[in-house]
Image: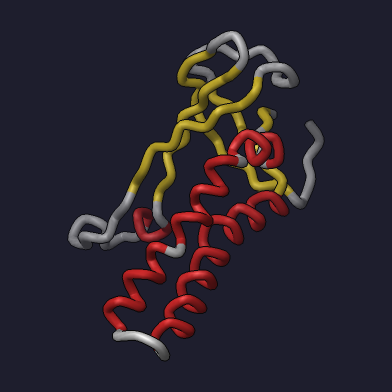
Length: 138
């Protein structure tokens, strides 16, 4: 794959393979984890993520091999919108509208419950979202 500016790239290690997918383990380190004060700071955060890449267009890899995983940056931005921005807007708008008609506690509870249809819709359309948000191996 050619080097492009509009891609997000992360280095990872091939965890395992199956007939259709390649599973790559990526270790995400928070920005403060590289700080010189990390030994005394309690906010150091490292998480492992398992990313699935479809095998059909991927090069041959083997478990333990280091690879670079790429995603179009536009898809990353769209994922942020679907994952954070839209639910936040739904929550705040529902809370503002309902707080004029009922006690704040009930308005808050109903605003949280209002997110259930949104996340249910994301779950129902997960297969089409997987096609949209594809990772590739370089």
